[in-house]
Amino acid sequence: MNKVPFVDLYAQYLTIKNDIDDAIASTIKSSSYIGGDAVKKFENAFAEYLGIDHVMSCANGTDSLEILLQSFGIGKGDEVIVPAHSWISTSESVTAVGASPVFVDTEEDYFTIDAALIEKAITSKTKAIIPVHIYGHPADMEAIMQIADKYKLVVIEDCAQAHGATINGKKIGTIGHASSFSFYPGKNLGAYGDAGAMATNNAAIAEKARMIANHGQKGKHNHIIEGRNSRLDGLQAAILSVKLKHLQKWTEQRIANASSYSSLLNAVNVDLPKTKDNYAHVFHLYVIKHDNRDALQQKLKDAGIETAIHYPVALPFLPCYSESNYKPTDFPVSYKNQSRILSIPMFAELTKEQMTYVAEQIAASL
Ligand SMILES: *Cc1c(COP(=O)(O)O)cnc(C)c1O
Image (cartoon, helix red, strand yellow):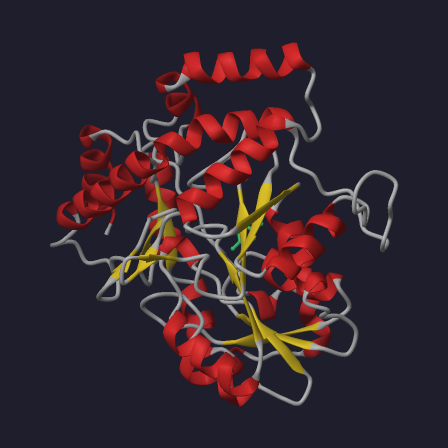
C-alpha cells in the first residue's frame, strides 16, 4: 500500500466532481463528440489564458510537435536542435517529419537546454530549435530567441510540462514562434485521456496546423493538402474547460508544495530543485538529486512512498539512437544527471502530513 502516491488524479477529481460530471453529461446529451462548441470554447479559453492569438487543439502533445514542424515546412534533410534531456516526444517528432534531431547538452541545475552550446550545434541544415521547459522550469528563452534571430531558425516551445510557467511574468508558450502543449492526464493541466494543443501568434501557421490536424481540409471536403486525423474530442475539451478554471490555483498550490518540500529538506543532504531569478517554475515534477539515487528510491518504496525517474536514460543514449554511437562525454551533464535524479510525489492536493512524511523518510534513508 502506498502511503504517498506519486500523483493522485482521483483526489483532484473529487474537488471538481459536480462540474466534471455535468460537463461529461452535457457532451453526451448533445452528442458533440468530435469538434463542436466545447472544442472551440476550450481553444478560446486557453488562448485567453496564455495571452496568444491562436490555439489549435489536437490529439496529444506529440502530434502537436509534429504538426507544428510540418506547418513550418520542416522535413527531409533538415536538422532540429533538441535538448539531450527530455521525454522522447521531443526528438521522436523531429524524426517523424523526416528531419534529424541534433542533441544539445543541458544545464546541470535546471535540466533545460544549455543555450551556450546551441551555436556549436548549428549547421547549414539547421531549421529549428525545440526548447523544453522541463519539469516546469522555463528554458533560457531570451538566449534561444537571440540565436534563432541570428541564424533565422524557428523556435517551437515544448510546453508539455510547464502550463503557466513564466519568464519575467511572460507566459512560456508565447515567446517562441509557436508552442506545443500536452494535456496527458498527469500533466499540470490534464484531460481524462490523450489531448494536446498548439499555440501561436502567426495566423498562417495557425491555419496550416489546423488543416494538417484535420485531414488537410479547409472547410468540409476541401482537402487542400493531405493531412491526418489529430483532433481533440468533445469530452476532453469539456473536461479541460472545467479544469482550466482551476489551473492558476493548482499551480500556486504546486509552487507552495515545492517550497514546503524545500524547507523540509533544507538540512538534508540531497540536491534540491533550483529556479532561476525572474523565472516561475510550475513544478510539474519536484526532482531531487543524490549519488545513491537507486538505494534512496528503494528505501522510499519500502516506506510506501511512490517515486519516479524522469528520465532514467537521456535521449541520445536510448537504444533507438544507438546507431549514432553517442558517448557519455558528448553530453556529460545529461549523462551525470540521469543517474542522480529522482522525482518525488508532487501534485496540488498533497497534504502537509504527506510532505512531512516524505521528507522524514528521505532524511532517514541517507
Ligand atoms: C508529455 C510530454 C510530451 C508529449 O505529450 P503526449 O500528450 O503524451 O503526447 C512531449 N514533450 C514532453 C517534454 C512531455 O513531457
